[in-house]
Amino acid sequence: MKGDLRGEQILLIDPDSSFLRHAKGMLSELGAQVHLAHGLEDAISVLTIERVEVILFDASLPFSGAELKENYKAYNPQARCFALYKSRPSQIEPGLDGYLLKPLSIGDSLEKLARPQVQQDLPVSRLDPLTELLRPHMIFRSPVMRQRLHMLPQIAASGHGVLITGETGTGKEVVARALHHLSSFKQGPFIAVNCGAIPETLIEGELFGHEKGAFTGAGNTHKGKFELAEGGTLFLDEIGEMPLVLQARLLRVLEERQLYRVGGEKAIEVNVRVLAATRVGLRKAVEDGLFRQDLYYRLNILPVHLPPLRERREDIPLLAWHFLERAFHEAGRSAPLPSLTDAAINLLLDQPWHGNVRELRNLMTRLAVLLPPQIAYIEPKHLRAYFPEAIEQPSESLEPSPSGTHRFSSGVIELDQKPPSPGLTQSNKEGIFIPYGLEMEEAQRRILDMTLNRTGGNKSEAARILGMSLRTVRRRYNES
Image (cartoon, rainbow, N blue to C red; front, side, top):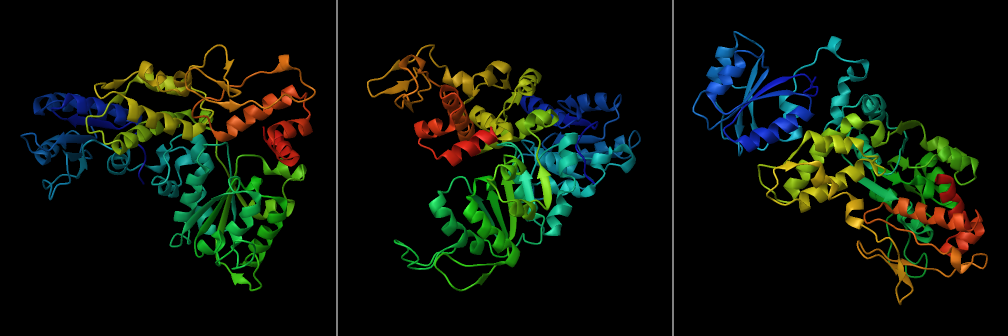
């Protein structure tokens, strides 16, 4: 079974100092203890005093890697040796254990360099070899994530319904895709639907389809998401946003395995696995009459709860390296890539990460795209420059513009100012700053909180001011 690189002694031999720095930083964050050498003489000095388990050397160096490995066997018979290439070689030197491509990637390093783990050395949460199946889909090493996900392959193989819960940005769709790829439905499509992003008047047709002429404008027969996901997985994200009337129809489809299109009279058989996700507690929604109890129990056969990033801080360096490396490659930046310093990692560890993994990914993407090319080491000052609050910089006072909107001097965010309600005086008017890049759900929550505060908790009045239905206000209030 492959583990991470925690505790491994790795020797890097390369004449390129910038590559050595970047590779050492990445391998160290994966848990390895890394030694550096610019050539054979430096390498021999390290090997005579350290018990190295993995030797990585640049294939262009003028010595035989296989011979170096053979001579070192007297010190450590289990040592492995890999050549480093800039492009995929047609063949490698006989006697080597393999090769890696430069610049090093997290996935390749974990796959090829991780040593076999003996069961006695592992904590209970890492004994299940099936957890390694999750590595292509998600990266983690924190105990809480291992505890929450170590049964995921078995859950995937069961074919039963799964309810994935967790805060916004924790990776619920990533887990859903992993469940799909590990299940017997993997040959079929994976169809994702955000139930909160489709208007109530359209969601029925989106899910179940409609017949030609079923309503005004229905010029053609339309297959719904259930039919499109035939033989595969249908992922219903934000299931708590689904209207009650549609919940009853969804329950019937799940129970009977057949559906009727809108305006149709013929039953259509469906073979689809349904996964659902929510960022709010559905049990509370059931108590408030906003979600059907029978549907809740039908969906919640196998629950999976994802912890927020603040509860799995051991994963932050690993995720940061992964997202940064991917973003640099997507941006077309060539090696050597800038390295995150220890101080930068510590800054990331200190952040609250209200947006969870998605917020970290967005920060690393922003950093990779905007970081000047001459920077070799990413320090806290560089990171702070790309935090959303550093970009926003709102002015201390707001001046109303002629159009009636409130305008910020920088990070320009405009909010239409609605007329004050009859119960509020003009002196009680106040602005609200919506930061650039803030998640839509969080922005809506802030606006609702401010409005409820101004109306003294009067939900009907808040609904009138915001142009929302009272039911929506109540639901969002219960979620906050």
